[in-house]
Image (tube, rainbow, N blue to C red):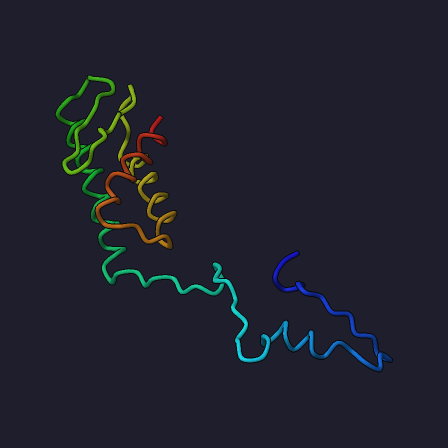
Length: 138
């Protein structure tokens, strides 16, 4: 049972003595103590995103795409490769065929739309985008 129907009290129209004390205790709490409601996703306030979160998300993903495009221009004719990105532990693994700029931009837009509502730490954006790019670039 969910918290909305627990406890459930059935009060009939012609009931002369409904369980008023039990209903009061279930709604308000017993004498002297307030009813404690467990926090859940509906009752907990979400932290406000930083004012420049979307800007950082956009700038960081564009920076990674610029690295990919620059690497592909410098290594024409080579298929695939690993790109080391500063401040990130894992490397970016490019597929054997070159990725076009529209492909990269589509992946970037998907990542931004997926993470627009989920506030990420600025330090994690680049690593998560590289993971996303590695997974979707195949």
